[in-house]
Length: 432
Image 1 (cartoon, helix red, strand yellow):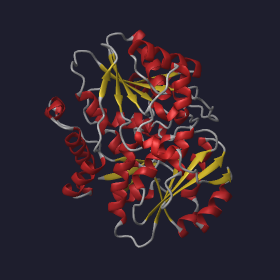
Image 2 (cartoon, rainbow, N blue to C red):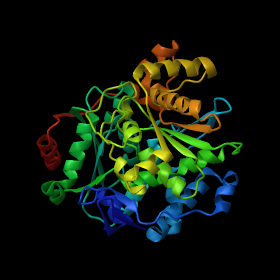
Image 3 (cartoon, one colour):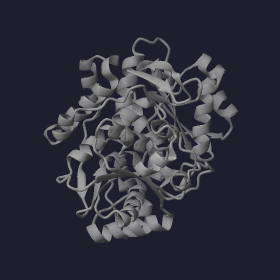
């Protein structure tokens, strides 16, 4: 498997280089040189395959001979070992529950597969690998769970102070051992900016072996493509066009969907569902991308004002706005609409949906008002119990905590507090 940088397509990189570096030196993003088209028979026979069989076939097609086939198969079967059930709301709307992994978020798929991949590539190294990751809520918990106690790998998670839910924060700050949480005085965009600065800093890269576990790392996107195939296979009838609605923050999840479509999955359209941080829906309306400071919302994992993976979307479509807007529709959903939707879904279906899923439901509803002939699949990205206070106050009922959250709810938070200044982060990393 060969990859290139979105800023310099002429230079090629191996999968090992791309995974372990995280970012190219030119501050672009890695993309596969070839996105293979899967056979029509594979797509036709998805319903005959298990989730793990699908994941292995998709990953083998993408990764090719970069990893021995038997090793790759073990990685897939060890990391993709929990379900992604499709739940029916009505004849038009479904939700694909991606929150049945250890951290109760869709990012478990990417983080666990990435941990296996990095562990494999890291075995020949003598120097410890430091994984630096920014989180707006769910990424940090998934990465912490995926890499916890992995020999030779240390994880440093930056998160914005006061801008993640209490239980999300516990998932970031209670692991210990090889996992360190840094509480940053600032926004998620500040966290993400500092991580990117770290990868470009010569002193840090001389002293440390750095890599990233954000969706900027290509090894996160590969496994996120798996569940699009798994969701599609569970739809009983494909007589109507199938649309995937993706709650979106940094846009890695939607990018993985675009890769799935290029591999041959017959997705008719994508709906990019954002909260009030609607820079991509705005771009889809007028062709102008205008990044801006993120706003704090109740769907905090999507509080991103400058989504990194937008560069990959532009790359896939050669920055052609007319083509992009024909493939993707975008809707920004306010907090009040999100709250109304949580209540509506509970009243209509007795289903408890989290704020991010509610953003997806509201966006899909708007899209289907204009496209009533479609079947829509919302990606359910997080378990509602992670947003306990918000959801319980809206539906007026208690939510039972899953065992994963019960176990951490009484643990003590352990975090290093720094200001949103790169020199503070650099000093900490160098003396860590």
